[in-house]
Image 1 (cartoon, chains in turn brown, yellow):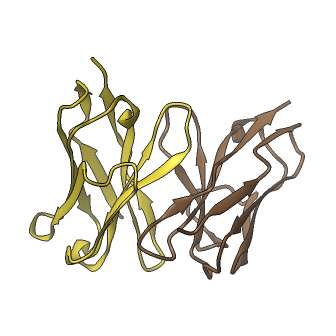
Image 2 (cartoon, rainbow over the protein chains, first blue to last red):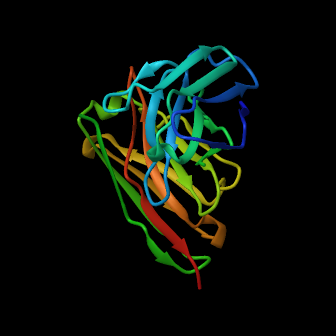
Amino acid sequence: EIVLTQSPDFQSVTPKQKVTITCRASQSIGSMLHWYQQKSDQSPKVLIKFASQSVSGVPSRFRGSGSGTDFTLTINSLEAEDAAAYYCHQSSNSTWTFGQGTKVEIK
Amino acid sequence: EVQLVESGGGLVQPGRSLRLSCAASGFTFDDYAMNWVRLAPGKGLEWVSGISWNSDHRDYADSVKGRFTISRDNAKNSLYLQMNSLRTDDTAFYYCAMVGRGEVSWGQGTLVTVSS
């Protein structure tokens, strides 16, 4: 099983600050890494697909980077509506796995 | 546009069964593997099961192995999850999802509540 480890588990941030969330895979997964935002009572929303590809309708302040085992989600100039849990997800083989999640709180 | 619509969730007693369905549209369904993922209250996302395009290969999370069965009907563009011997810790929103050529799509989910 490919283990994904996210860091940090929790982050409290003021609006307009930059947020960086990392995701490390236990083995190389190429670019088969996706990022999601999940708010209470809503289904997970795809923010970034295949490590760095943007998704239609997602604000440009969300950026993804990385390949192999180390990946980063960056939120530039955080807005109040970005308070949520964020997950990374690997689909490099037939048994998917997810990171444990990062909760972002707005100060 | 890819659309995935789940149905079949509801309230069920422990030990009973439930069958979830996912209706797919907007893409060539039989070209892609399909998966079920769940989100339990206060927990993180958990992959549940996946099935290859032709049903030859099926995988399950350890937490559901032997109790859940994934299947698909390519003629009906539909994915299923038969859930037997349900436990209270199976309570969650269940989502069908696919990752394809340049595409990552999830449905809106269906809620399964296991309680006496």
